[in-house]
Length: 470
Image (tube, rainbow, N blue to C red; front, side, top):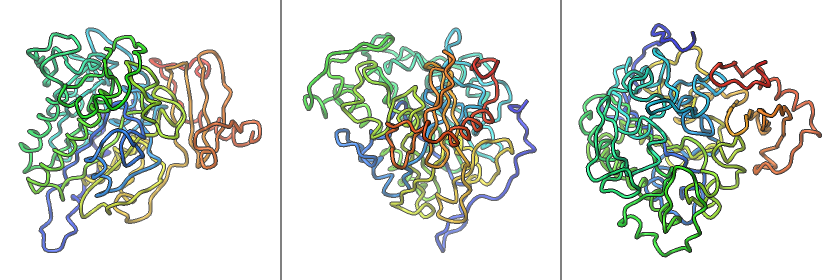
């Protein structure tokens, strides 16, 4: 089975040294991977946001590299996380949709899955994660501790993460009850504040050894919940639209202000992490990446207002869609002395590229069956960058979908559960907002993309797309 752990595929090498003259070779670089939840491409300042303040993330982009054509693993939470952790695109990934399990959690990763965290452990890294896991509930084979995470604190279950004032969180296998939080929309302890505290403690505790810190924050995924102190920065700036509903979420009297305040609260955490790295003299030995698990949420869920904030920029669609708005996400990487400051690249890449990239940073090589390509040559502006022939997604949810980006061409199928196999075709260079279907004008391109879809899809008993699995 392709998912079984095969340590012999991992080739060890030496760590990347510092480039500054006069400094001795550093230990293996630390890696911090920050992944926001449902943060749209256009919701931070360096990607064009005008209303929400994100000074720390914008500063990160100035000191590093900003990607304009980076894509999430999938269009919703759990399958996107699976692609990131396993280096597999959605046609090969084990988890391909959000599937709830009892008593809580999502479809667990199988025992022995080759994950980024496990491979970094094998290279001598201490691994930690704080935030939302979504790849296996308590007692399952997908628990973080069984998938390469030495220390975990946060939500195992995605649905529990809809409430930022959770009655409890998980510390490894221990359920931690949060006093003052009774499960209602208001409480004394906001989960993000705890994630920040735990992250800073993890960095300090492991400052003498190489570490991998994965921060899958729950912000700005709704419900809209934030402290009054944080809310005050935006309260009263905009009219409050009527609550449009959203099952399982909580209304907020000031939804636009609450949403903006949540993003700014996360931005402040990014700043505090960077400040701590500098204080501990770790900034030049640490690669910091910021991205999102999928595009901004569809309009109106939980009181969110993606149209008002232009959350996905010019891109069509929202979370759950394989149009660009559901997949294209911010991606920033900073590493002083290694990644040139203030650069921008339009290299098409996806979150499954992180596994080979970060293993190369750590001095190793990825398993041969990864779908990812290391983007380290682009990050370091050094050497030839291998590129994907095309990028492929499939998502059985939201009606059943497939998509391919091949150069500037984008092909997408929707409503496959109803038997639809029509491929819409868009020219992303001339029509980045995917407004004009060119399929009839370019049947030869459609045929090529259909072949790519067929070649990239491995049937899944858990997530069948019946119209092509029959």
